Structure formats: structure tokens, C-alpha cells
Image (cartoon, rainbow, N blue to C red; front, side, top):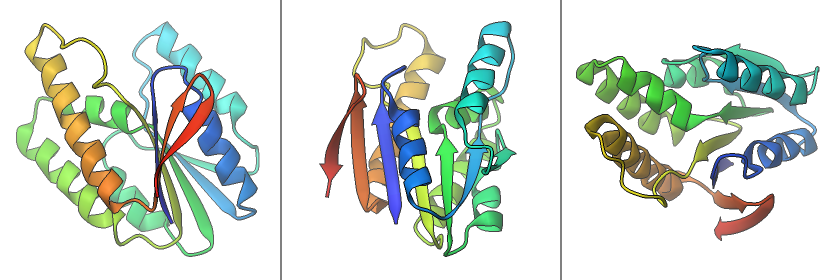
Length: 170
């Protein structure tokens, strides 16, 4: 099963993903992509850590997402990745175009072949104003294209607004 859960900031998407993972009654691996560059981000990470089940294993991976997925995916496991927009931001901020393209393509290729249940969480960033700087516009574009590719490969796509899940696919 491949799932993509989209929503805005503080929409409830992570909570929904955690509920779905917990209800599976399977081993859960949580892949966290965030990096704590400031106090506000440290607080967000701490809050997310406290929300997770103590029975889950967590792997922190800000760049090599596909490799970690391939290493840990198995039929009797749920992998929850939170979140793809932070992963994209991490890659784009490295300012290494070949590395960015390689990691994105590797991720898209491996996603469709992974065993088990994979739940991806990502922010929908394309519904607001167009940013006024090139890097932010690139981020919105790249994230939108990534979401389209993943939605096409996913069995279920859900959009979360104000804690209300709207199933987009199937």
C-alpha cells in the first residue's frame, strides 16, 4: 500500500498518518526528515517526537530518503515518512543540482517498488501566493511536481484541512 497525505501547516496530516500507522497493528518505522536549525524548529521536532508511539523505531534522514526506505521496507512493516517538503527543502538548500536530481529520481523510482505499507506526509504548498524569490518558487514547483508523480504511484491520496481528511484517491 502506498499513501500520500497532503495538507497545509497544522492541518492534522501528521496526526492522521500516525493514526493510520498505529491502526495497522504492524511494526512501524518513522522516518523523520527535519533538521533543527533554530529554536522554533527544535520545538516542532520535540513535539513530533512526543506524539509518536514509544514502540516505533525512528530513523532521522534529511537527504538519502530512498536509500533508507530501501534498507528498511519489508512486507510486515509500515513506514511513515514525515515530511517530504522538509526533505525537498533540505536538498534544494544544499545548492547541488546533480545531487538534488539524483536523490529525487532515486526516491521516485524506489517508491513504486517498495514492499509493505508506506505513508508519506507532505505540505501542499501550491495553493498560496506565488513567492517573490527564485528559490521559493523553485521549491513550490519541485514540490508540486513531486506530489503529482507520487499521487500517480499511490494507492490512496488524502488531503487534510482543519483536521478533516478528504480522500482524493481512489
